[in-house]
Image 1 (cartoon, rainbow, N blue to C red):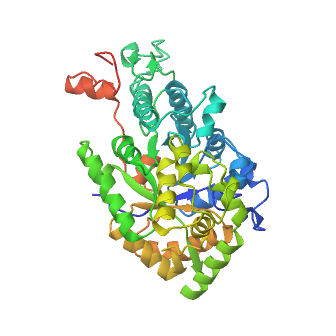
Image 2: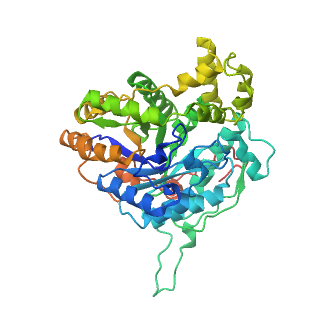
Image 3: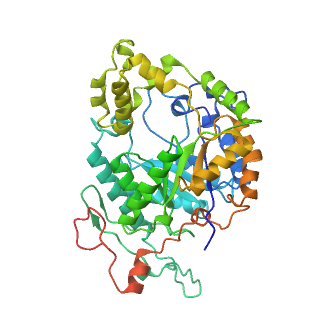
Length: 460
């Protein structure tokens, strides 16, 4: 068996995502970094030199003037990743696309194209869109409710995966002497009629060397966890401490097993904040100074509206009790996050001001300290099955460089992180199995491919 090793992802949000309104003031970050392809190429190559498994591009399609700097002005994920594909050789390229406001055929075609351009390094982060305002950009009066969002997501992903299997791997003999380009028996029409989508197919692009792009999912609600356990190869999440991380890890792996999957075929990658100092005390001082410099109460009040469907909290008296009625505006937005904020305020009897201050208060990351301390803690989480890997937000470039130069060598010496890339695809490097074409498998086993979830027809 291949030895289990810590996987590494780099999240590229150069001018600062939620909660980081001023990180773009760092002199090492150009003010236009979020739309500067040279910046992305530079850090994708740095991550590749450090043998990271992937870079991850987040996305959403609705903004207000209160949105964080990176969200206000950024490149579309797959266009960006296609550029990175020809500027790198090994690192995985993962982008966010929503199932709520895209059609399966287009998603399948775009990711297949990225997978071929990158020679098997593409990954899709599946989301259902929490920014409810996005609906208004797609001719809808309101966003889908939770049940519809996740019902659509499951059917959407399964349709995309089926489209990716339109061609078997040996469908193109390309025999010039026999004047035979395609073996038509290896081409399969989908003819899917479901609750949310109707797709005839087939897809007009062949599979890549990894079979299918790697599917990731990020969602902490019950529906989100269940969807991830059912369809994802990798899970993006957040864990504030070891116990929470271990509980989430066990929950996802258990759900995957309940769906008949091998739990080892799904990797859990929480996003982490890392601060490396000369000593533990030095690192804590750096962490505190960085957080305080990136803290703005007024902007936080405005940004608090995002999980609540961009509800305007500036209309309330800051020193009155937290307005719990605002939770109703989150029902078609980031409800799980909004509910946690509301419960915090109610449980502690907070005013709106106190709630924002509590959310804004400096947080001590588990991964802050000297290089040895950070390496020890990462290994503890890894060995304790609280994670399979990490997603590091490249916030301040100097800190990312310290992690690469000081922490990774320690983990490599211990055998926790690999010395070099083991394979040529993202699946290879994440230790995930090649996805066999469903029609090839069905022919070999003498059975018909199973119907897709939500299918209204007897055959696929």
